[in-house]
Amino acid sequence: MTRRFFLALLMSYFTLFASASNYLTFTAEEDSSSFCIKKREIYPNVEYSLDDGKTWNVLKNNLVVSFWKKGDKALLRGYNPDGFCVFEGEPSYTAFHMQGKIAASGSVMSLIDSIGESKTIPSKYCFYALFNKCTSLTQAPELPATTLTEDCYFGMFEDCTSLTQAHELPATTLANSCYAYMFSGCTSLTQASELPATTLTENCYAYMFEDCTSLTQAPELPATTLANSCYAYMFSGCTSLTQAPKLPATTLTDECYNGMFTYCTSLTQAPELPATTLAEYCYNEMFGYCTSLTQAPELPAMDLANFCYKNMFSICTSLTQAPELPAKTLAILCYEGMFSNCKNLQKIKVGFDIWLDGTFAWLDCVAPTGTFYCPKGLPLEYGEDRIPEGWNVKYIDDGADVTEHVSDASFKAWAADGKITYTGATMPVEIYDINGRLVKKMNEKSQSVDVPQHGIYVVKSGNVSLKVEL
Image (cartoon, rainbow, N blue to C red; front, side, top):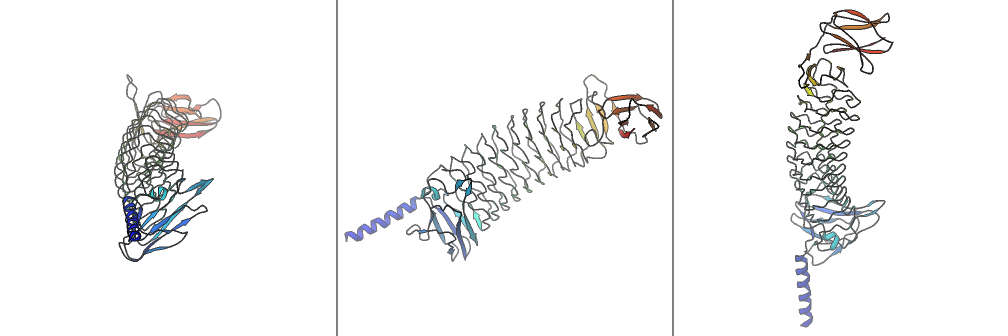
């Protein structure tokens, strides 16, 4: 009698313990679903139960656990206090593989502490690629950790194409690359997790929702302290995203917004960008290929950084007006390709009055006619690296008469017999050397002009700019 009582008490204890634990749980959502686990090199401890925790079995490498009917479930646990994935030069990771349709629930931390109570991830790369390419996974498990580690969730749900919703991510203290590629390629994901952190780390959100083509709304991003590449390509390829989140940071870091919204082809309006302290490549390709973008944000920064706006609006084919660029001094390739292939762009206003090497191909393939607003002291040089051919020029200087240079399509110029000859001018003609220095200015309609030496010159009349070689 005593022995039966003890066994009954023991069984009730195990049942109570199991019910109190928050095990990672897989539930079949259709008949004949199954899962297995594949491990590389170093095997973590993993067990599974098909009877609500009464009995447990070791989940061996490649052992297939079958669910015969919809509603069958398996509890999973493990005791891996040093982490589920071991990093020795490169991640030695363990990943689940699935067939059919399976919803995950409970805490993923039961693979660490065996009961799912821990809120601390113990090692870098801990859950690296855990459900990578699990196209049968319809629901993600709970991720309750508030203390993260480097690369801890890297690629965790990458290419889980049946996943529609992500669980809460409560951590406010992040680690380098902690969420990188986490939901990349989740093409059915319609709702993203909240991201409450206000201080970011390097690559923390890089590629996090890349190619989530069903995502229509981005989470709020309240962070004001950024880090290198923190948002790099975060929403790249989110073709259903129509609205961008607010980006309140005023001091940027290298590549912080690099490619953040590239190929977001449904995005019609960009967020405000209040930053006045820039960094190298900070806005590189930020809105590249956003073909529905009709309005660009203001760019108030006066002090530029090398490559800061590189390709920022490249191939934004619906953009008709560029934001004002008030900076008076350029940095190395700061505007490189900035509006390249914005084929409907017809207006731009700049504050600089000296051409440096910051504008390489910045207005390549824009609209054939438009208006270029600039200070009166800026030399009128034309081409894809300067003022677009065929555009009018208006001066913006305070206190100066606004002067408009219009197109002079009948104008022709060539070099012969040691002179530069032009004809058909209806406006004053200016000749510049290869370094942009004004050599001569004439008012005659046609004339042959001596120049100081042989070389390449640019001859301009109105908006027509012709290159000749003597």
